[in-house]
Image (cartoon, rainbow, N blue to C red; front, side, top):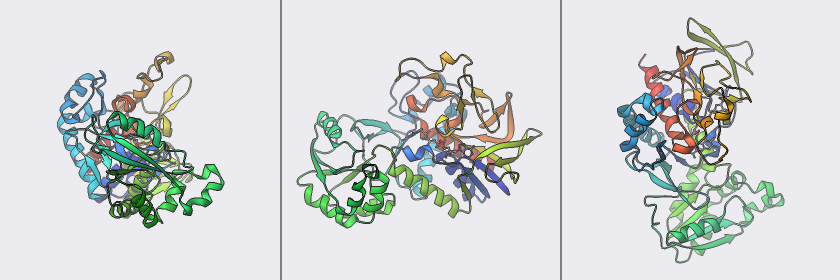
Length: 415
Ligand SMILES: Cc1cc2nc3c(=O)[nH]c(=O)nc-3n(C[C@H](O)[C@H](O)[C@H](O)COP(=O)(O)OP(=O)(O)OC[C@H]3O[C@@H](n4cnc5c(N)ncnc54)[C@H](O)[C@@H]3O)c2cc1C
């Protein structure tokens, strides 16, 4: 099987890279073993919320130079300030053009409302999901927070308590919704995905309940257990007679699953080949170039290409494997930046920054993977597997995944 570019890993980073290459006429394949981090996503993409020295970032665009100064091996430092700014603007256009509507700006973070009702800075939020501009005051005097009786992955009371701290009154409304009654027979069936499959088909009935019971509230808050098909969210917004904002629930994430599925469908629509449920196991490297990769399902039949992109994610997706002695990248055995002293991987304070969080695969400034300190010429590394950044502490996870993918696509296309 021959392609221009073969991408290993079909999460956010692999898909953004694959779509960009396909848009420009490349024949691409994505091989992906399973679910990605998107299935657990908040519905917002973070670019930069905190600098490594702990200071808060209001404007990623203004603070990028400080980040580069503090962490010269950061993936954003490899891009440099002008390219970071250009690609972050392009990323926003990328999503809007392919019709995943997002709001936000790299000039100023806004705030998404978490399932606990707290406000967390972020860069881009999918339209329809609860986000606000001001972290000191919400734009509503009173809201109605709805939940379906028996849905345990959403906690209106926590949200109401947090809103009260910001001066917004909440009216909690629990309701029964007869079309989902069959799910109640088993409590484990009352999950966001199962509920969304039903609610998406009953938007008229749902909007009627929300309209009738939201009284004099300025806005409606509803758990994101609707919108596996995004047109259902659009329709709900049209039919409900006041602003309605969805808040992500405990996983699985409806907005994340929707985004993953939409990006997948778009990639295939652009002519890409996506092989789900297959695992790349090993590669042939000749003269410092990857020639072929082999997968579990295809055995001896190789995938060959001019370029390869490794977007297999971090520990969570097994792009990186940590044993009690070492951390390694399992397909190419690329150089991984980590301490050989295991006690340095973590601290005993759970919520502190841990070194393992920024360990990852070493690359040169073009994101080419290093093997024994030398870049492999046609192997690019993108997304969560990269070294030099801490997505949890910095709030930079999606930003690194998207910007490294766009940068790699640019490099491949310029060859
Ligand atoms: C649980 C969780 C929630 C997160 N939520 C957010 C959020 O809300 N906002 C945010 O900004 N960031 C979030 N992040 C940070 C996240 O890392 C990035 O946002 C981004 O989604 C990572 O994308 P990725 O494509 O690099 O990796 P992943 O999403 O991890 O995708 C890697 C893919 O590669 C596949 N794969 C792995 N090995 C192989 C192999 N050998 N062969 C074939 N396929 C393989 C995996 O199955 C997976 O599908 C979250 C991270 C986690 C872990």
